[in-house]
Image (cartoon, rainbow, N blue to C red; front, side):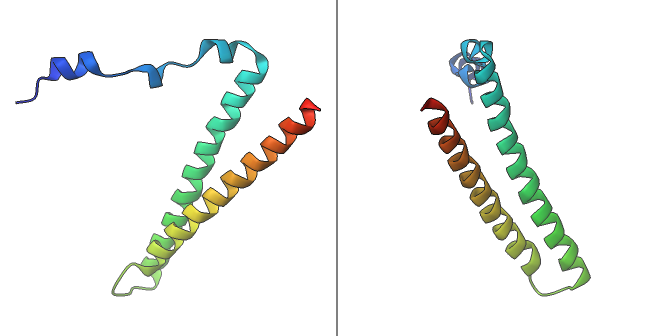
Length: 99
């Protein structure tokens, strides 16, 4: 049997704590919001790809759910491409602001 009390005591809740020092300055807060929106954008992109695939599979029935599989994989690739592009642009903006 699993000792639940032991698990609760040993869990590390540090990932729930927001770094107050980084949040205290304006740039830290802006970065926090910007990087949080990256996750939301990725989730929405993948959801829309899977939803469109499911819709197309309903319209054009096949033995397997090809549209769902294909569009989900493509939307994950698109989301990662978009994330890397935004991170690269962000890094270039930081380097130009430092100079």
